[in-house]
Length: 613
Image 1 (cartoon, rainbow, N blue to C red):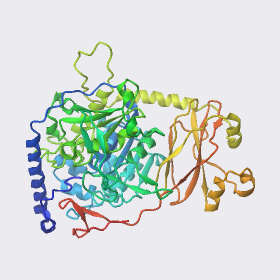
Image 2: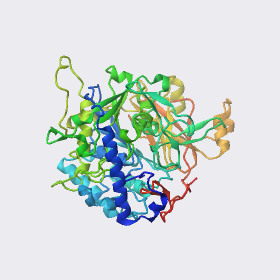
Image 3: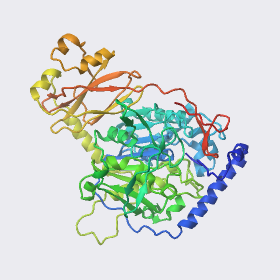
């Protein structure tokens, strides 16, 4: 999102009359006036005094996510540092270097909005063409060869999670389709999850939200204050852009709440446990972003590159005590910075609840609004080149040398710079940047070790017999998400297992499902049809803790068994299958959203209340 959701001081009548440059200039002036007022009110705010803490973090386990401009930023960081980033989650974002040749200094932002958002009638949609895709792919290859981003081989090891709600009229479905197509050039299909079947608006979809209309829940902050969580119904766009999507469960009293954070993190890391409010013993810490915003090795004012003075960090209790932890970087969208919505994104995006019990530190960098150079009145992350000036070529912002990408990666490196005894009086660690070569070499060594481990000769699978003879606790697999053609599975690590095999079969009728669920002893021999388990993984299995099944039929039911394999090739199989269903195809929907009016409109730019069901 870019100049999104201008303020209510403009009536819908005046907004409807505005057009062309007049409307855009009004929008800029409006954003500028509000920003100057905000800066005046915040001038006396105390400056954060702290460096980031040094924690025991394995950077090779880093994942990133983002919503809207944050999704563009997550993709940029994931491509630039693919040797270290193992997973990227993008909600309502577009492909890498989507701004293309128009990105230099942000000068042609109207063209960029038209191509890379496509939802505002004031900026007539310009499709992302094959020529645009070729430019993105070729630029990626050229920059990798030049060393300003990591080698593209790193992308093939990543897992990619993409979400688009079909009531999103800010960033249209065509844009997220283009993101999927960009990744298809580098990432295997079985590592690329894409969900489009929920009626969500343009928002972070969170399970940490209270019920719409209910009294907001509150969470205790780092300094003892309480911040209400903000959320809206699933299909709405606006507010803090944090929505709750709930659907009917198996009983009238049950409801299923979609969980973006849980879905993506488990796709990256395997089955995880979500903490309830009583288990949340970690803390939110504020730090000084200015220590990590550098130009030519010298510290610069973060506002000069449209970043806020303060950033935030969620540290689980175990990570605070020195246990080895992973890092997740969560990028907010436009108008979701703390100066605009306080701590609603930091506390309500849904990541902290999954981080607490799974040793995941969550970094929340903060963009800031600016009306001078760079021009960024709504605190968007730089995905169209507003920080690129002078002799910097188009796309500089999307490389490791980009001002915001380099600053955030210094934060990641600083978090992973574990303190050693006796250095407490030494100035805190501020890295100069880099491509993460050390982690890439370590990752390559781990890959070689895992490959050697999985070359152990294995025996043909004897499914039922192996399960009976071994008598061990099977992996507790679960379905973490589904689309109309994919099902994502995850399971916890099984002690002693060297790999895992995934088996699937499909239930064709309700009677088949009923027969499979019965516990009668003669069920298999007399009543239920027999199914041949179809192996989805290689004979040697896989070493990861999640799996994406693809090419499935919409609205169909499938069964799975996840076998843990020991070093002798014996399988540990659960007694019961995991029964899951694909989503139905989303309805045909063509929403639009006026950035000037801050509301849903039709293709004619007239206000509308219509939403797709």
